[in-house]
Image 1 (tube, rainbow, N blue to C red):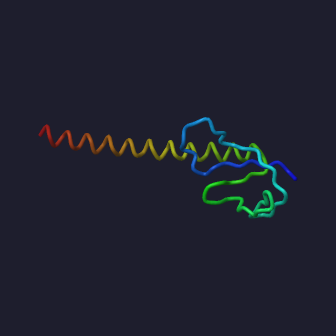
Image 2 (spheres, rainbow, N blue to C red):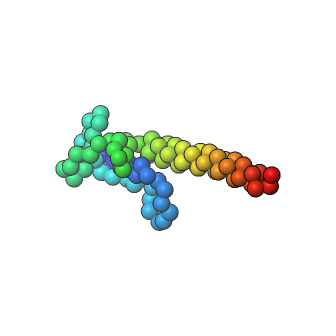
Image 3 (cartoon, rainbow, N blue to C red):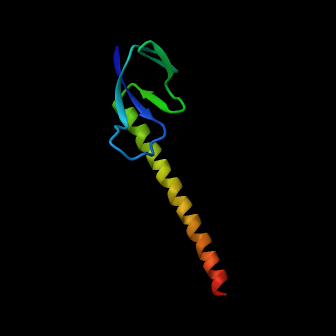
Length: 91
């Protein structure tokens, strides 16, 4: 058994949950981990498994930073559209 770290891919909720959770892995391959006798993909739709806490942390930070960048771009686009609408109203 080895301690790995699980990160949920959809880091978007607020709450008291831990974003990086230590988990006991029975065995692993290049693409899978086995937990309590069940095989899980290391990189999957929801949960992702990393052999080190640093890798898990870097993945989580990268996901959140990507979400922040996307939302900043969306806000800029919305502000441009708002300015265009206001310019039409005022002309």
